[in-house]
Image (tube, rainbow, N blue to C red; front, side, top):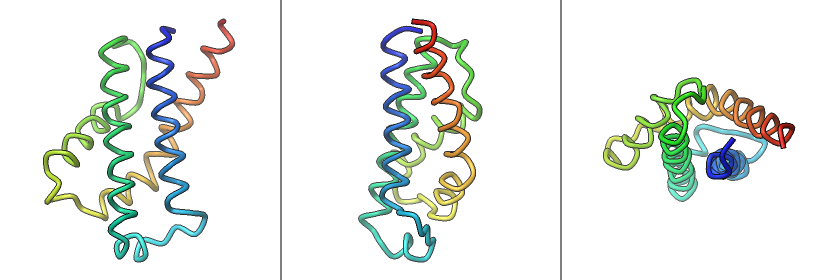
Length: 116
């Protein structure tokens, strides 16, 4: 795996970890909705995840990231449709999609490390 791809996968992993850190162990949607700073921080990390995913796919279209197109589309939606960002949708991404993405990224990084 190219070094550049590993860097982007690492960035995705760090962004996911940051989101989990911002939300803490007691993830509370109501508290999230009320905390503008927290919402903006999470949205920024989602932008990073989407951009890094897009760059990975440009470097190697054969890399399999489930929901890759949706990840990139979400990044575009958060950036360009900032006034239409739906907290419920973001929360669904956090709850349902980030755990899968994290698992996939860690597996790719681990496999890459084992090949070196």
